[in-house]
Length: 88
Image 1: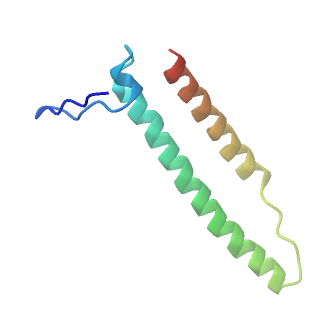
Image 2: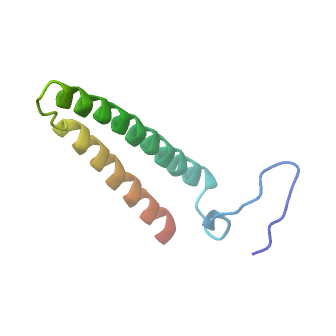
């Protein structure tokens, strides 16, 4: 693939260059993956803190069901959006 550099816009490096899909959708989905990654990191740090606190107190720290559901649903939505972008 030849990348053409223009002064007025960024080069097309994704499959958006080969399809009729606006590249803004790729940017939205990419940003979504970035946000999901940050959410996983934040949840991991919070989980580690809660587990350590529970261990120190001799208890158990269950993972909140809503957290796992929310992260899972967000991942499925992003995966479906990616599939749609690639297939269409």
